[in-house]
Length: 132
Image (cartoon, rainbow, N blue to C red; front, side, top):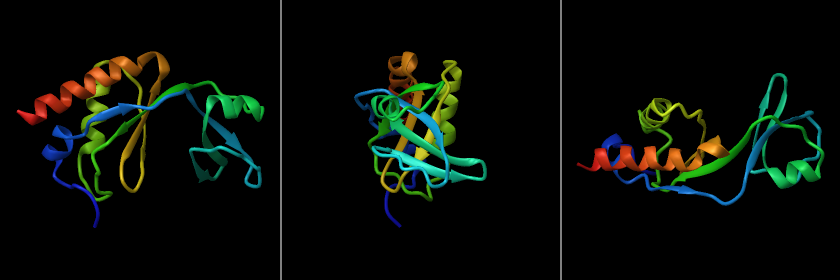
């Protein structure tokens, strides 16, 4: 097992960080050649792809949701319980939609670009409260 599992420590030390750029979620056929993807997931209906907006535009993809990418820099375990729920609840209280990608080392949040700074403030507040 790798990473932190204690929820209180995860929240207190999550250190959210805003990544540069704008990101979009697109769909592609199962055999489509997609370059520059940040991540993808095969679903029954097709392949969902997360791309930098510039890459999506250059490759002619359509999208409707333009997101900012925030990384929780704490190294969380895939077995940790409650982190996604706590983060989603804090953002929901502020009326912020959040799409979460749990990777091996860190959790990554995609929020509407217009909500990026508000999301960071909400997450810093959650972290400060957990550190008390």
